[in-house]
Image (cartoon, rainbow, N blue to C red):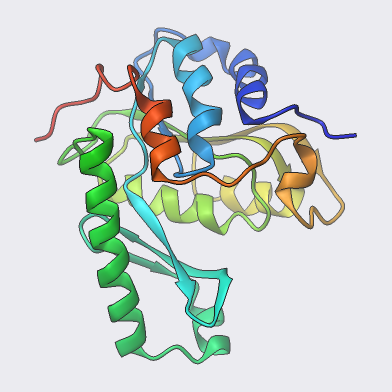
Length: 218
């Protein structure tokens, strides 16, 4: 039996563990796309601003389920170098894929009504995703907000493998999880009754009415 009915329910449970941050001025930053439906009830419960992490995944062209890195709206890359080597991706291929995905991300952000701030100096950022398998996606999100100057970084997920939690905890101030597993997670989706794929249209619908308290761009 699944632990969570869906991402939204998981977000409500996660919010209960984060209640001490209510009205503390934290900025809730979900990892698109799956982190958004988890983060919306968290931001609502904490009375916090919500801003998606401005990054997009890079997929191996001949093995689309495999993510080898992320690109930000400013073109910064976070690459899984061992995987890049294993897949024998060339610098030219990486640049081409990253350029295409950066443009797609910029289009998404515009359609979502999101303005990415020039910096996050002095801000406490709460990164939210729907789970951590290896922790590498969350690590990339941490790198993204560190580059924007976040003062304090927390990572929150409904479910994580303990190795992922240990890895991510080395790079941020705290990791909060409802469920920490010591067996292989295989697929995060097995912990959810409903774990349907999300696209940019779903994200736009989820973000309606949640972006009014965005931090202003520098």
